[in-house]
Structures are given as structure tokens and as C-alpha cells.
Image (cartoon, rainbow over all chains, first blue to last red; front, side, top):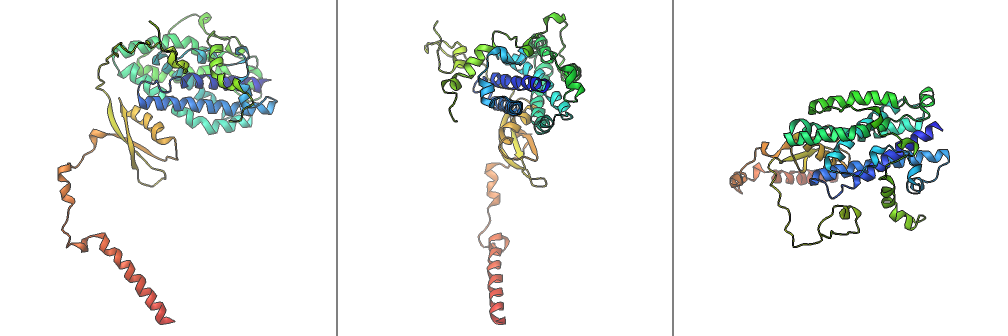
Length: 249
Length: 131
């Protein structure tokens, strides 16, 4: 069903990137940035909770159960969010590409015919706006106002992350239904807005998008085909839950 | 060289040598970070008050850090940051300017506080007379 599929894609993206970004907690480059990035990670987990809760309306189990009891193949997140945190350059660039898409997605969903999503979008766009503000500030600073070294590092992060980021917009089987029913304008429309939006900070930062063939776009995640990094992440994330799935916290 | 195996898998993944005889890596001191003072208000129209400081390389990042460090607990309806170095500070050695001679009580608020007691006493007296 089209709404269920959309909710799973969004919720799994939020949960997995939230978990990945939380891996920086306590290890961030400076205290203030550690606090900000950890807080952003926590927000993402909150968004996934809201979306998993919506799925209960469609006969799904509790949010904890859906989040922690599936195998990698049952997840609908894009591959971008699964990759290990890498260096801070990789994590920042992923945060920049992902959150810009996330903000635009929720802005489109403010007009959705599916009311629970409209309400959620109104509630959390402010949070994601901050996430984008944080990402843009770093990208412009390190790309455009920093040193030659920081610029080179950021450009190589763009080259590495951009093909992965395009995987966010892998079309689902339900694109037509979603737009016909007024639920969501669709991945193609979102991708177009995203390109317009990222162009502004990238230009300020003097960073350019790489050219490459369509074959190198990392698709598959939306259909359950993931990188080898997702299952180990799930094993680690669910370690405590699996000790006693019925435990009350 | 064997590396630290921690209960925290993230620490294990850092491959830190399990040998504390190795001297720590000495990094160059950062000179580009400044401190910024953060001011918030909880109500529109209220005064911004000082809530603390943050370290940041630029004013924009200072605002970005301040938002999470001081704005994620309660409601915030306004936030300012300013470079600590931009604040004009009265020198500690000049604090004696605030000192005053004790006989000048008529210039101090504390003296006027007693006026309230007198008004109260007067009102009480008036009521007693009317009764």
C-alpha cells in the first residue's frame, strides 16, 4: 500500500541516520559540536518514532517491535544512511545532503491529503530547519571560508557522498498513486527541488557536484537491497532489545 | 599492535593501541576558536539575559551551537550571541567606583523600603479610626 510504503521509507531513513549520527556522541570534534550533532541524531529517532506510530493504523506492531525486530531486507531506507560514519567530513556531507532532502520532503507533505503526515510535517519542520542551518553553516565554512586543505577535503566528500545521496530519490512502485491521491508529490519532484536547494550553499562553498553515469547511483535500498553495513548496524542497535523484547522500559 | 576492546563497540572501532606506554599524539593548539556569550529570552518583549558561553570558529557556528546548548530545554523566544571580546568590561580594579559612604542612605533603595511599612501602618490606623 502506497502510504505504508512511504511511511516505512521515511521512518527507516530517520531511524538509521539517527543511529549512525549518534555514533559520534562523545567522540565529536569539539564539545559544542558534539552536543549539536547528538541532539540532531535524537531528533531523527523522534521522527522515526512518530512515523512508526502512524504505521500502527495500518495494522503494524508497536514502534519498538517494527524498529528492532526486522532483518536488513525488510528495511526500506536508502543506502546513504547505512554507511559507517567515516570521518567527520563524510558524516557532515551526508547530514547536509540528507537533511536538505528531508526538509523539502516535509515541506511538500505540509500539503498532503493524508492528515497525520500533514500534522507531523507542521510539527517538525522547525527542527529539520535547524538541522539544515547547522549543515549549511559547516559546509560553507569548511568549503568556502576555511583553508585550502578544508576545501579539498569537503570537495572529496561531495564526490563520495553525492552518488549515494541520489539514492534517497529512488522511485517506489507507488509514485503515481501517491501523487494522484495528493499524498506526496513524488521522488522526482523532490529530487528537482533538492538540486535547486543544495546549489545555493554549494556555490557559496565553492564546491561542485561530480559528473558520473547513472549506473553509479546507489539504488536498491527502497526495495530491501542494502549494503553489507546495514545488518551489522541492526545487530548492534538491537543488542539490548533482543535480550528481552518484552521488557518494560 | 593489540588494540583496546571496549564494551562500547564504537571505541573498539577506533583501534586505539592497547599500550599506554605510547606517548599521546600531541596536536597543535587551536588558535582560531573564540568564545561567544549567549543571551536568551523566554517571552516576547522580555529582556534577553545571559545564559552562558560557547566556543566557536565563527559567529554563525556560535549561534548554531548556542541553539542546541542553551535552547533545547525550555521555550526560547529570542537568542543573541556576541563575541566575548566585543563586550566592554569594567576593570576589576575600578569596582571601588560602586562603593558609597554609609551616611547617604537617602540615595539607596533600601531606605525607601521602609516607606511601605509606614504606609501599611497608616492604612491600618485609618481603618481602626473608621471602625
